[in-house]
Length: 343
Image 1 (cartoon, one colour):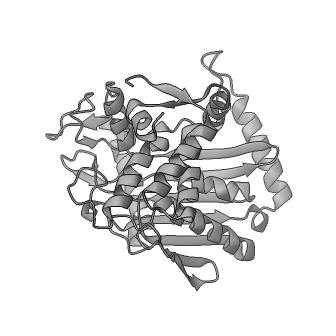
Image 2 (image 1 turned 90 degrees about the vertical axis):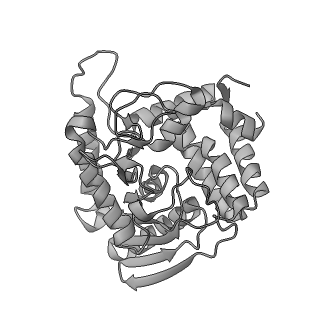
């Protein structure tokens, strides 16, 4: 029970579904969460994949997460709306919010939905992808509790605050960006703790602000760009906080209850998210958009690579390549998750 194993997607999805239902999650919450976790695990975003099922189950049982949330929508203008997640699983809220954003964009060209009283939503790309699958460009942001220091700072201030964007490409899988504005997601630190593997250089610091590669000593992350260019990541994290929390009324990063490193497992965290859907047909037109993005990607992938066996890739190419490989060879599961899911 100490080694990583490889498990097929169908088995994993059924185990995650069973675990969430056993913890009391509603069928709707469970379905949305399982779908988002499986997206991450299929595409190689293991830090936000099925390994998080254990945490969500614990928060459902402890009362922090509402097992049967009543999502409510409020249309605030022709192209905008707010969603109250009722302290439920963030995956359910984000999936519904993006569905609503797409519906609004079909009417007005652009649909923007802010989410309040939400929780951790996993990989934000899972929801941006929903827009692309509907033929629209999707953008998703989410704030989180402070575990990333500012550029030149000594204390955590921003969350890992992801930005995701997906764009449809006719005849191809979507262009897909999904990044944290920190050096790495903190869930990757937790994954490395489980695997007992050292962190890369320049991504984390200990409680005194000194860089460390020891995942067990990591107290906070460095912003994207590391010790030399972290001002870029810190600014992007602030942009996410403004869109996800300031704009929606959710709790800002520095005031939010930590996701895991806390004894309080009953108080909701009021995470904020922001979902945007854009209909290309209302701008350059569908035909012109389809031609332009296909030409753009053809040109991008034709750029000569510095190493012949590592071709230039567009955002998403690596993830889709990983998904194809894992469909055949299985999804790697770390020891802690293996024990939780009974594999």
